[in-house]
Length: 279
Image (cartoon, rainbow, N blue to C red; front, side, top):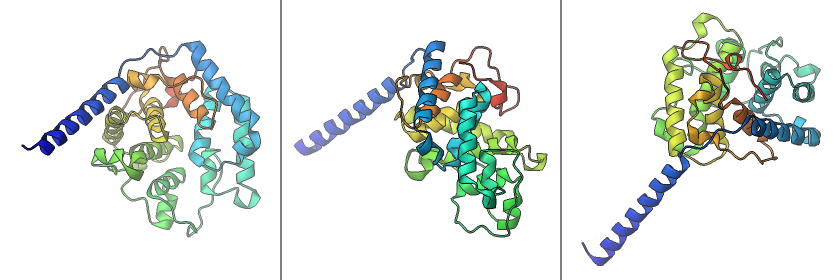
């Protein structure tokens, strides 16, 4: 091996060693946040949203409002519930009040599914609306096939790059919506599908320690579908000082982690009702 070959080999070895060190450090054990830290983090998030009410309620991301609604219900927080209602009323005027997406804000809202959908939807959005309508959109619009029967995110390593970073969490969210809407048993997914997606998320959390939207979704969905005890210790150490957008997601996630006595309801997919949010 020549001089340049030795240099390349040395540089490659050093790069791999650095990557390994980063992964080991990022996946180290960290102490669980205290009850006071969790309460303070969540309260900062709520206060930020209240201080920016106009811009917050103008946000139209259904998934984010679904999470805010869940936090409001689990804490009994009328301030968050009021924000959810304000956002719903702003985003769904009378002529849109029966749009299928309104069920992300109000799960029991009556809906009307038109013969065709005028907007092209991403695959995960097709799964969401199919779940929100208990399959009516699939029957009328003819899409979302396969998402509730098999893992659409394999090979799981593809979840480290591009849009696939959100694939497993989005599919798991769709399965969660099926249960929230109490869709018929014939629409419910096989238990092993949820378990596969959860395992994929755990692997991705270990290999991708960056604290970005996809990472927050992974922690959230593991806590939401398996209980907070499923979160690896390295997922518990998010900053409790943030007060920017997405802090409700962070604060809510921190409040799910380490809940005493929060045991799954049974089966492969225990859901939030099993783990009431505490301050």
